[in-house]
Image 1: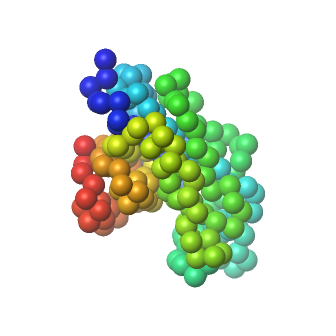
Image 2: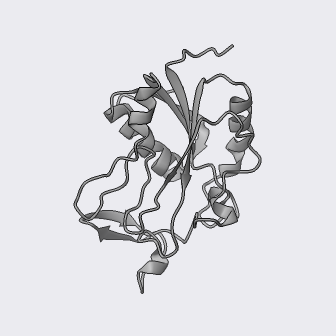
Image 3: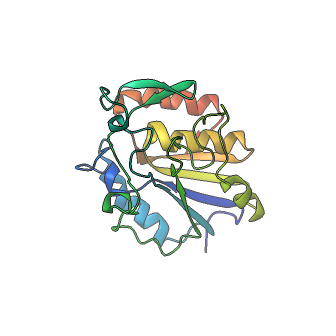
Length: 208
């Protein structure tokens, strides 16, 4: 029996091979969370489970390779806002874009693919990054969760300092209570952990 009420959902963010050590955009110790996430899903603690999946077309605007003379991890202005340029990663249909095969994904209720607009990056599972019009287009996840009666969201996955953080912040901004499963996340770089904790605290998001 689930220890969490039916109004609580788990969102597993971007647990994909390209974010693992040896992948195209490796997170620090990203593979260390795989057994824990797998165990959490197998425990059936949550009635509602969502996985987000980075799903970029070739030549995506967030790729450094799409900007001649630019290198990965440089920052440019895209649609009037800062954009980190990444190595090509999670390209649609490639093995690196799959959900990690070491996890039993049977409990999933929804796989939400994001970042498929070739001109707009999408860190968050709830909204894209800023697009050409300056807005952040919704993915539809917030409405989907509300229709299922969800009031609280627990988040984990990769990367702690980007996609998991933005997902948590956007969920809080959308009115959900949010809990951040810190030990089941890993960052692109640990140097940003203090800033991530500050951002979570500012958004009223508790560590779980």
